[in-house]
Image (cartoon, rainbow, N blue to C red; front, top):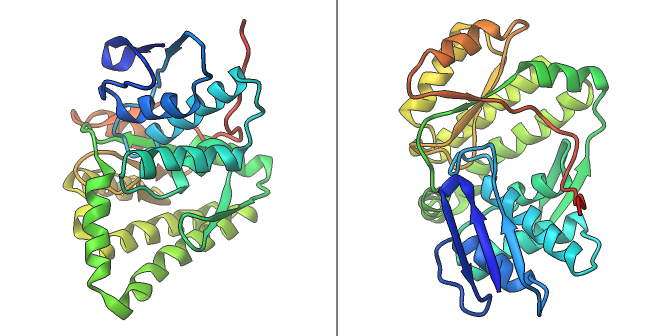
Length: 285
C-alpha cells in the first residue's frame, strides 16, 4: 500500500501498487515496479520547477523516486542503471516517446557528453570543467519559464513522423544537432564560454530545421530580448512547442537581461543554477 502526496498538484491519495488508479501514471508505474514488497510506504514528491517546463522534471522525479525505493530495499543505486530504469518507465510501461538524455542528466549530474548508438543505449563521458568555468556558468545561466505546460511526447511524434519521411536526408537533418553537442562539450572543457553560447544557438537553429513548431512565439520573444541585451547564447529546452523553457547564457553583466525578462507578464525567471551533483539518497531518519 502506498500513500502518495503531491503538494504541487494539491493531490494526496492511497493505492495498492498492483491496482494503481492512473491519477499520476508515471509515478504509479515507478512504484509498481520498485516499491519493496510488504511495505506500507508514504511518499512525498515536490519540485521547485513547474511541471511541463521541458527541463526533464518528470525524468528527474522518477530517477529520484527509483533511487529512494532501491535504497529502502537495501540496494545501492547506480547512475547508469537508474537512468535506464527511469527511461523504461516512460517508454515501456507508459508507451510514450522519450529520449534518454533527461534521465542521464538527473542520474549523473554535472556536465557530460552523451553518445547514443543505437537508441536507447548510451555512453556517458564526464567533462572536466574548471572551477572558473563553473562559476561563470552559475553567474550567467538564466532559465526562463514561458508560462505554459508542455507535453514533449506530442512534439516528439510530429518530429519522428517528419524524419520518417525524410528518407536519406534524415542524417543531414540530425548532423547539426550532433555538431552542436560536440562543440558545446569542447568549449566547456577548455573554458570557452563564448563558443559554448554559439553552440547553444546552433542547437536551437537545428531544432527549427527539424520542425518549426519546436520554437514558439514566446520562445522567440525571449531570444529577441536575449539578443538585445548581448547574451552569448540561448537554447530552447526539451521538444519546444508552446510551453516549456528557454535557457539563456547572459552577457558579462546579466542583470539587465534578468530585469527585462522579469518585466514580461507571461515569463518567469526560475532560480536555477548548474549542478555538479547527480542523484543522491539522504537518510534523514
